[in-house]
Length: 483
Ligand SMILES: Cc1ncc(COP(=O)(O)O)c(C=O)c1O
Image (cartoon, rainbow, N blue to C red; front, side):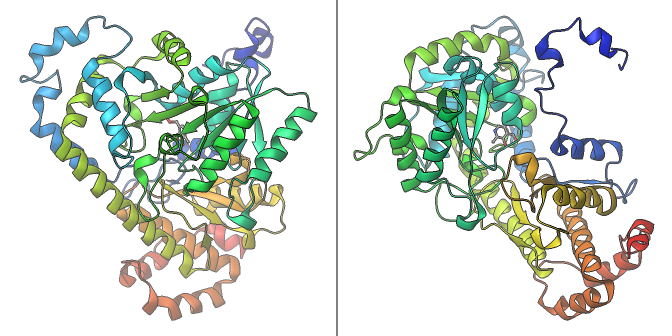
């Protein structure tokens, strides 16, 4: 690659050359830094630890066990090979009926079985990524906009905007009320868009939120339903983290709220985006779902879904897996427990060195407050700190500016895409970094005082070994040069 010059670019389309994919951001740069120098416990123990990827890898043992016990679900096994031909030939783009039924039941189950989803409304797409773009194509024309509360998942810029020409308009949320989506903030954003002559076609909510790890309460959801009905605009709810709740309160889906008697709602305006990338931890399978309450949208989306269907082999495997009720119940419960444990270990480890995090009960990440470590409260200072964390501490965390956060100093750190030992190393790197930032002498004393209080199952012998090891950031020439 690399042989297309800028002159050649003139021969390409605007879409191909307009940078709308959003990959020129710190969020994706962090991934690149990881790819160049990936951490490995034995082969590259000084490498970058990937904490910028919202992946749920904590329950693969359960999945593997199920796959071994159910060889017929995989058509490339001796037991499953008789289904190979039927699965390999063309299927219609509605998807396998058993797949749609199993996904609809699963969507109900992860929402506490308080609502049922109709299999006829399940439309497939290539992950939630494809689902968002497809919905944007159905609901808005180029130049029109969706409101979206900040901070928000950076991929939305690519998914909703790049190829569709649709815009995203920020609803500014602030740390003073834990980034709550208020009526006032929604109204202010709507007015501002109108003053800029931008036609608002919808509101995009992500519940539970990436990057905050928080969920929307019932009143907020009701307020947003009232808001979009009053303005007669669409509401797209991305609920792809629905089953990652690990503490109270329970998750409330938009599909519950619109059924409530005291909420008047035109259901034609309501659309849900779902995927199995986070709740089951299968981003590689690219199973995305559009569930619209609007018949016209459902029909159009189904036709458009031909561009991003889920392979029938995957549908077949997933429909078998999700039809195993006992497995699904066990998986959801176990996944939530493991996430809770990991989240607890991580937040306590950060608290030991005085790093605050936004209180959260869902998701695969923590929204970390590093404002005290900034030289000044600016986005330049945030990026400066981020570069040190990537290049010297060797952790790929993502800066708040890449999530369009309105305040500098917040960072997202993912905690479920690594094993326990890697997490401990990451925590130690953070601890050492903060100590070193505060001054090595004072910091080490504090660490020693706190040793007895450490709740993380960190072996102190290991910590000492690590501090004295050549891999410790304390021994890193970069760190030493800076002290
Ligand atoms: C809020 C949100 N929506 C959509 C996506 C994309 O998901 P998928 O892998 O299913 O395309 C992500 C991925 O991180 C996400 O966090």
